[in-house]
Amino acid sequence: MEVIWQGIVKAIELVLGFDTEVWQITWLSLKISGGATLISLLLGVPLGIALALIRFRGRDVAVALINTAGGKAFADFMVAPQTQNVIKNFGVDKFGQSLFVPVAGKKEEELGV
Image (tube, rainbow, N blue to C red):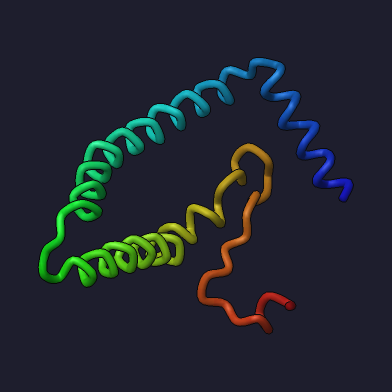
């Protein structure tokens, strides 16, 4: 519990201390996520409206495929070796240790669960 509290205190210090690197990272994150959200809205809203209002043969299949494909794409991304490597190395440069633990593909015995 002590480690979590120290992390929260450090996060507050970095944000309230107007640390340049933290604000640059925050701004970049907002630009990227904002751009992705805008693209998703521009594509997804018209397609969603069309799927909701237009009846056509195979509509149920299309809806099921869209829902399934999105979930599978995200799951595949999260367990990909490149993503697991990013997770493993995240924070090492700045904090001397990884902030997250990659566990994709590991069995419960390997995790100590």
